[in-house]
Image 1 (spheres, each protein chain N blue to C red):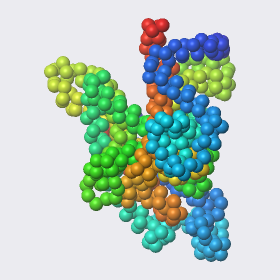
Image 2: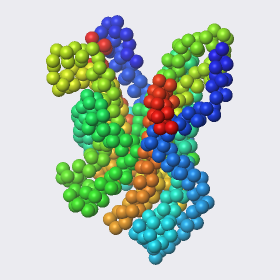
Image 3: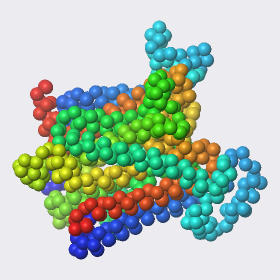
Image 4: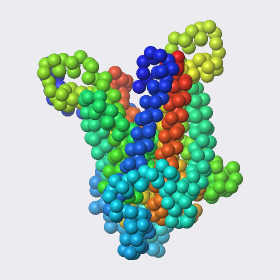
Length: 307
Length: 315
């Protein structure tokens, strides 16, 4: 019986998407956030090949050119950096690295953390203890300091940065998943599946995981913002992404020495970070309600009134 | 997490011992991790010496510090040095690395204590008032600050604050120490993120406490709102708050690294970044381990406070 219900849920995928879309229309903040993130995502994909040349071409006569010069092309509207490169183009190009590091770190930590959490919640107390202690070691120390020392020893590259940030975030998913598994495994449908002879792996992945996934999705959205901030902080300190690669955090750092006469160098990349992380926060708020069967009616009621 | 209260004192002791052992394992885990990371990934001599060091210098360094010995012997010596607080000399300052670190650590400690005191006080008051009137001024204020804390990079706030308050308005100094004015911007920037997190925990916990039966009883008896919030409800809402205060005090160091670097504050965060950029590995190592020890002690204190406050453990 349980088998059938999971199959039907999977078969109703299109109606799920439609329902989510309708709920998104009901929350204006979340809608704006989703649209903004979509634009950022597109820029991340096409940015470097579209504006890559423009963003690296130096123009020493236009050093620190002021923003809001509407007479020039639109890439100059945000002004230019210390080497006369258009800031808007550089921000667009930097989108890819910024998002790639964060996405890689979030995906890696979410997958590893969830798997470990499933194992910890479903296996013997001893295995559980070992996994939880490992998480404690990581959690008990400020994440930025772990990143600092690991990057110092291993050297900083995009891949290392991704790995370090992933390691510091694994406990978040691990703890959440484990807590949920401990609760869900006592529920009737899991007991029923076990009585009917389902294997542990089947119970974990077909019965328990689907119940945990909504929580983890919300968490990952929120964490994306956190990891982005961490990456930009490391790049700002000079131990994250190294030039000539660029991220928004590194751009703020490069603009810091011209703070008194060219404030726009640091301002725009900062705004890019803020708008993105704020969108992620708003979207995660919406997801928490939209994916919760108990709370969902709030959005669905509003949606039906509008349409 | 909380053991069943069979015998009150025994349960409390067991709770504290369990937590202490868990924190100690974390501390030891970190010490081991740092050793293996620094010895097993490439050439340790290259890590400790400046980039321009010659091959002879590296060879000499290896012999002098026994880097050619078996790994286990090296590990024993490393643990011995860590336990006795011998981290070698700072290459930059030609003084024992531990002295340099402890000096800087005192600054950070003060910064953290002042900030966390302000954060805790403000978060408890604002969070309680926000819980008392959902959707009111304090509720909206706290959610705005929480959103800012979770979305705005702290280094960017610091930079903007310097431009506005130091450069344009010339009210506050840009960096360094010396007067009380020097402390305002670093503390203000450090304040935002932990406040945003703690205030939400206070609010959530208070909403639960305010809807409980004993608060309704107090209200029915005609007790005023003030005492209801700050006497009846708050005391019972404090437990989750204490846990999150401990977490935030530890991660305040994340912010301290940033804030100290930007404001030229001579704390351990700035020391760590400077030592990394100038490859002074002894100091980096000492700073990491001193910080870890401080966090270990603080966790212990938090657990003690928790056990003392929770009547289910203390009885």
